Length: 308
Image (cartoon, rainbow, N blue to C red):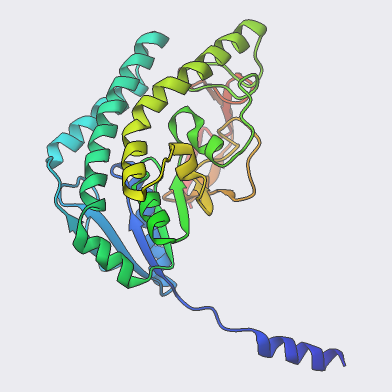
């Protein structure tokens, strides 16, 4: 009887088939990590189409995927300058308020450029017709530019997000995960998950400021999404429809926090080579901007490492 039931069950199974994947990428280092995934998807037989602006920095053509481009009113040099300015500001040793305001202003300028590119994609009738007719199975995108999610909602396509994180913990809140400011340190606060009362107050005030600063940064995308989808839409409502969140993070390096079941941590994907421990020792390093875990030094168990 058992064998008969097993055979009946096996007859009901169908073989897995490759799917059609639409990729709406993000420039810079975001693309370098995502490109590795596209290579693996191609090996599994998936059909991949990447849509990117004609003016692009690192996003390139490949035999791994089909590239489709659309015109935008800015040049490659403008993208490079924007990304360079943002990275310099984030990792500077300026006082908190100076670093916060500079980062916010630079991110707002960069966001305006992303919004422009998104508008030119959404209102490209030829590409929108192509997406509708191609019947994609999934959209693979970085939610830092939620253009992919706008397209996904318009054509009712599931979305897989590929990200490191979003400003103001928008990703955590959009996924409806708990985000208590009394425990989870805010960006630039230099706090740890073990805070004194004054540090918790500081952390709480930063979280309040995020409410209006990030609303102003993402407001352009919200207006764009509302106009295109013909209904009011906030950035959190927009991203809350994501099916899976692939986060390039790991609790070895980040603060432990509550997460939702559809958040999958793939921090190791950024590792290029494997290493074997050759000589063990201990060194201590404490990042000036983002202290780790309890705020103590991060101990590396390696004095010298050789490639495996």
